[in-house]
Length: 251
Image (cartoon, rainbow, N blue to C red; front, side, top):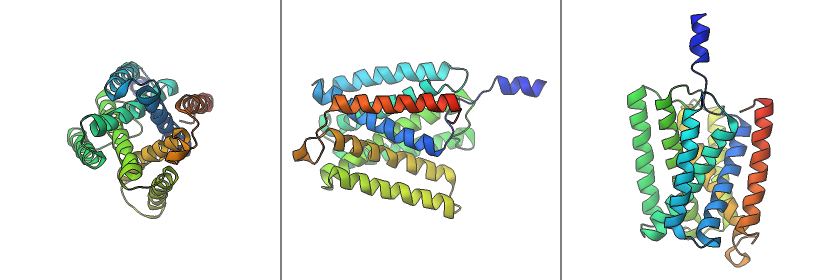
């Protein structure tokens, strides 16, 4: 009886890592890219204002998630979208407002991520991504995710702006890295936590470059669908998958 009470009071708070999780993550990152560009470019609010708006959205969503008693798909993916959107603004703010450049920004974000994971491991003795019951662990989890999505954005923009790759080529490069990570997961004994964070980082530039492919002009190598239609399509697809996963209790 006592054991069942303890379990009921310590319900998991995060999504299970499945194929559907990664599909939803990529769509969420695409949404984050198109929504971030909608605020900064289409609405002409700029990166500073865009960062403020997305930052407030992220903080509100995170507080709701942290205070929830169990895993609620809608809340969880709302925070994921928040991290992808604010991550877009953080990366662009560092590059275009602070003029650090995507390479310097990426190095700063890599350092922040490694330090976050090191502190997380030092404090808790291990790094957990599923299941998570403890609020302190969950806070480490979200900080690492926010930095990872910011880093992924910076790397994706580095591929297109600095390395000179088209959006389609950038998506193919990041997809290749993700495929390698999957193969390593199934064919080697490399720590699954390390592979998780590598995959998490690289699904962000994959989604970001795909978002750019949808919204940028034909002259820029995009399909010129516009940020509003691309954002609405991404919201619809992600919303449908969240509803499906909730009904089926898949993630």
